[in-house]
Length: 306
Length: 306
Image (cartoon, rainbow over all chains, first blue to last red):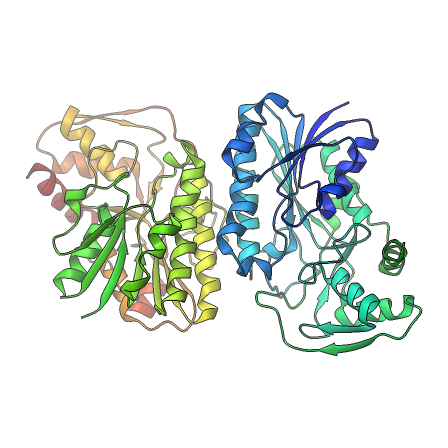
């Protein structure tokens, strides 16, 4: 039995990771400010501390726990929303990481896994993108995330094993269906189910690399299991390029009623397209994406309708 | 006559830039927290507001000024010191930039020039380093600085002309001679003058690209004068590679007494060596370094002894 801190366990990815760790018989503590997460989403058995991960007092209060590892998943996860309050974005996504790295150092916690993002790359001519590509984030959100990765890399020199998982477009059961500004799949699916009409902000030719939530959880577990002698960055991606139009076609195919589509406007800081090369994580962490988009969307629809 | 905000005018570089702008007949306001700067270093004629640039209240209070341009020079400028208080480093060097970019946007200020650093590069096999090189900062300090550059680049899309000047190792009259943890030239010179003995933390083979303060001021003025249609990053460098040993030889040659040298230990996050390609700033801003190291150190010694 190990003792983990999973930040953001009231959110989509944090809850899924925490649930898995609890099911394996571990102890899990979470810090969550419930800004975008929900108290009822926190899995049973998780010890919940309400607060901000960017709050030095909250993080200092965690010192007695002596965690075996920290999985830092909390944060504001939308490029679009980072423009609403840039200061909050920096604090919640970057200051938090710095404080958690300091906590790890001070409490002799040897491992920190950071939920990073494909948004650190920005638009890139060479695809599928590898971890060696240069980082030119297009959104304020991406800036804060790459800074957190750099901090993690630097703290590795103090003997903390740090890993950054660059999550591509994560979707699946548990995703917040109320938030129409965050999560491409959930946004379109929610509109389809509610209005039988999808309004897309941006071009149908934009594309993403969609990763199913269970595969993402497995990436965290794989990173946790593997000793890391240097800071590692991994794309958590499928290597499959799916356009917005193709995604919507899958949604239309699965739903038992007609869904119309309308394209209008755009989103600031949005990346036109990105998909990931996942050779490194396959090779080094023995991780493979197991759920393809058709099956994943099908499972998600089942979950929403239930 | 223009109306400028020069942050950090109680510090070495900020004071020199502010003095020059005042001498040209402009209005200058400064915000400085006097953490490393000195009240008496603020040039006559500069309106002084004591406070932190990372404090939202202070920055909001600047709204009525309607600056023509912001020169953001305040900040913690040592890689070594960034490890003492990583949170302060992030706030003073990055949160401050974000708040000033927001201020520029809110007050229709069309120009922001950021004092960045060669520390954004990290160690690099290809030298002299060009602005296109990848950014892998080795110190916490460098992480906060590259994040500020990214933010500046992103705000350019709102019509603010943003320029980041990557300052190499700046030295010259006005440098803080009391602070033995900041500024390679001032550290060695102060020890030589005080003890006739220099203790060097790190290898004699480390090297730097030393830029004289007047040349740095000219780089700010050149960036201010030039309309920028996209975010630009410039090395403020001489293209000359000088080892620690060579620097100390210059100091020994200039001082009228014997100075002994001792090498011991190292500094966390220190870069082994870096020097810059300055073709871009020469070509685009018509800027040339005018003061070589022998002359610059001579002027600095004259200043210290006076």
